Length: 120
Figure (tube, rainbow, N blue to C red):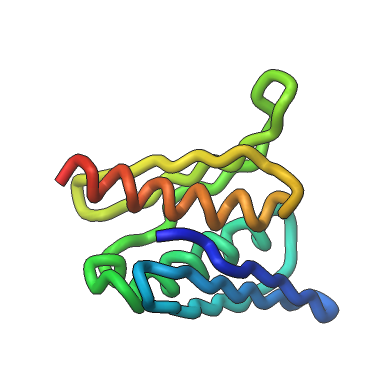
């Protein structure tokens, strides 16, 4: 599974995040909307990514975004997400690159799902 497209729209105090993920030949889109304050855009991107993944992996419907962080790690900046799935927390990480922090957050969510799949 990989991130195909990430877009964020801000209008006044509201924001909308749309994420497309591709798994095999399937494309799924997730959307999340909310108030634009602090690091809420990163969280909206993570929520939209989980919703997009739910379109190709029904178990994602039981996953909640716990924590999202975009912070320096040495000379790089990384996005880290913690997802809650019952008693099974999963962590995903992605380096912020040319796509910016929103793209990295979406990739970190996909990374967390990949780790869950690998350990199942």
